[in-house]
Length: 85
Image (cartoon, rainbow, N blue to C red; front, side, top):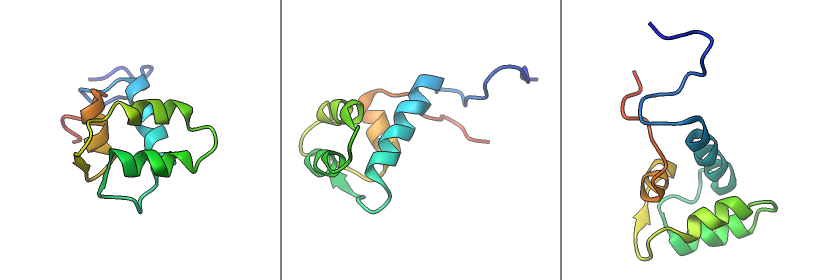
């Protein structure tokens, strides 16, 4: 049984990782996928206050297509849910 006083995070994630992934998702939106690093960076540059997200996106490998935020997070080494339910 989990402790109801602790934050609920799925196995394989951390609270910081969830926040980073949420920030990336918020900046990029839903319409851009699939996209490569350059397309993601260009989209993020349209948003004010995206410096942290831009720094992450610039670390992505060139020439690779990403289908969603989960794939971006995995490429950045941000923890992702291993099992949802």
